[in-house]
Image 1 (cartoon, rainbow, N blue to C red):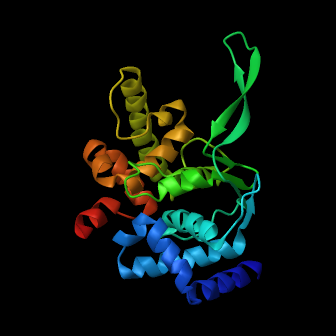
Image 2: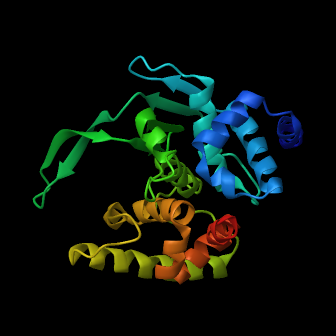
Image 3: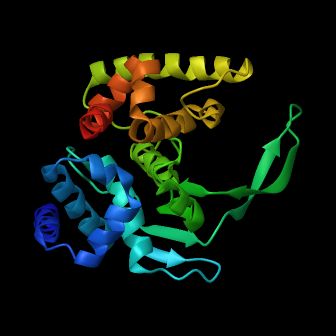
Length: 259
């Protein structure tokens, strides 16, 4: 009964007219929107509606949460939901937004097991406990068409997709065993290649941060898939194919048609 009511509520939200000012924010701040065909644009705006209704936004360090902030973040996140059965990041409840990079205390174990602590600056974080944390100036950087494959919102929300099965292992929930086998084979090869390229100092299409773990590899590969799809498809066709099958989108084709 609850699921039926939720589906009906979401369907109503997706059909609700999208405010003109909100559309301006999407057009100006979500570059991927410009290459989408009309039916995909309409779907994305519907997903934005649902995300804004279901997720709580909270400003940190005195940051003011405006409609532009909410719509821009939801607009980027909604790119990951197109053409799929959207569950709207079910574990996510709150999106915390800082004005700029924020400090997080991290723990660093050495080879002897001794743990030291230190504060590092972060542009974003994704928590298994129902929150995504973002720095607004980095979100704004992600909205710049010349961002060279960087998108902190896509990165952190990709982590939410990865965490949906309770494991941050770079493998989101897939449709069947055959898909899992293919995914693991392709992503392991891509991950190993990135580690090797980083160690050798080679320039990579995928951000070298992805070499730190399988979870980070999936997040940065997702960024590259949406932000530099032509380069990713050319350099890593198998990886691009797996991401295309998972997201049910072909950004490289859209970019080529849009030129």
